[in-house]
Image (cartoon, rainbow, N blue to C red; front, side):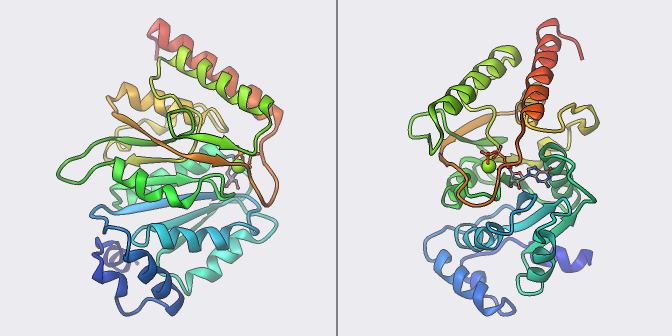
Amino acid sequence: MASDRSSRNAPMTTTACFAPGLPVNSLFVAARACATIPPMSQKTLITVATYNEMENLPRLVEEIDRYAPQAHILVIDDNSPDGTGRWCDAHKAVNPRIFCLHRAGKLGLGTATIAGMQYAIEHGYDFVLNMDADFSHQPKYLPNLLEAMGTADAPAADVAIGSRYIRGGGVEGWPVKRQLMSRAVNLYARTLLGLRPKDCSGAFRCYRTSLLKKLDFAAIESRGYSFQEEILWRLKRLGAKFREVPIIFLERQQGVSKIHSGEATAALRIILKLGLQNWLRLG
Ligand SMILES: Nc1nc2c(ncn2[C@@H]2O[C@H](COP(=O)(O)OP(=O)(O)OP(=O)(O)O)[C@@H](O)[C@H]2O)c(=O)[nH]1
Ligand SMILES: [Mg+2]
């Protein structure tokens, strides 16, 4: 298994997109993408946490193949009742770049993201890039995020953040109330945690695994949505360099949101607690 995986991980060049052994549908997708997308020299794992995303995942995987044809994809599924995890297992047979991590039940997006990061560290990836399954994070931005990380010879960032709140970024499909809430949460987190990025709550990000290796994952308190702010804060304390890339965030088109008010309140509480640690220089 290990040797099989490492040979698949070898950085691919443009011509390698046409390597024999890829199924016909992947060849077609890769060939289209390879014509326009420069080859990646760094081994990249794109992680997608899923809970009931059958309406989105098959098309998302196709789109990822199109925009990041050399990347591997890890689906972290929490035993979705709609069969998302079973689809992943079945699709593995025709797509050698997809991997499936199954967890027993709905354990939260934060812990799913940590599981993806640890998987990337354990399997020797250079970058791990997280995205939601619901097309709020458009696959067309994958090349921009990867480019923002720089090259192996000239690293440019430790975390590339898909940002709604810099020039060129934005949100489509949210009511004004939700937009205001999101901006308020960002301001709250940036102030309390002393973070400079304009978008600290978005989840569409690429991380350098060499920095993640230094992170004490056991210390992370967030299980849900404050995970995004908490990890930036912890990485900042390890000296991380952040870069923001503008993205237009789209409201979910298919399936239902998993966020609920209890999780949102818990997130605000955790950010406050970390903020006190930050300003009192504890922890
Ligand atoms: N594995 C796993 N994935 C989850 C869990 N909760 C949410 N997700 C996934 O995390 C991503 C984001 O969840 P969403 O429900 O879209 O939450 P959101 O984007 O904050 O909220 P909306 O804007 O309402 O869509 C999606 O891909 C979900 O399927 C969970 O407990 N476990
Ligand atoms: Mg969503």
